[in-house]
Image (cartoon, rainbow, N blue to C red):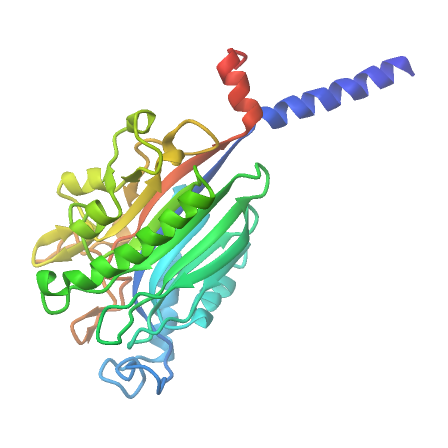
Length: 354
């Protein structure tokens, strides 16, 4: 009996030790899905071209092909395991993302955070998340006024908790105003969006100093533009930078890719890094949740790339002007890996037990 009791106690201790040593991983991504519309005319928005009777002859068959194509790329992410967090832009309704999740990812336990925005075209942002890893504590949206009593896409905010570690973090999904009319002429609209986000980050920093934050989206600006670099104060990130960074500092993981001349969107033969991922200093400080250095990537498998012509190397889109091509999107996705370490594990590492 004493032997059995000793064995039982040993198993409990071993399980406790292994639990303390457990590392948890997740993959966060973002993708502008390029006009993911249903086929029904919504009288409240300008979506007429994306109907069977519209200029783009948008039929149910074409929509089904689009959803299938998107699912192929999403499954490819994270070493063919699919993302744990995926911010998306240019979606007309939550029902479309639910159809994507339930039809093409029935083997996954994906959930959705989504708010209908006041955008005149009816396109919104959303957040798909792995319910096996995360629970949503709260979610909300933030309105962006761009002048003349006009608003643009909402900024989505979600606070999540990791099931096993208990670690919490904020995710913000953005789709800032386009450069329609010219970069300089439209700049004030993106500055307005940046300021709304900055104000919210300031609020969080006051009530929760040291909060973990991941900001993703299509910013329609590049990392060096004032909206991103000055208002958000999202600086270039190099491994180890966070050790000397002040509290509240934000790091742009995609700045390095931008500096290398790469991008997610090809415009007039120039690559633009419009799709970005920005993290708080606390996600690179060696505690709790951390970005895994040098894992930020543009997701571009061979099967989605244009193989010839002047757009060679660009992602193969759904449309080329008015011509239906049956592709994927006009933006490449981005993604990065993160690790979560428990407090017990961190204590062991500092004491030299690991």
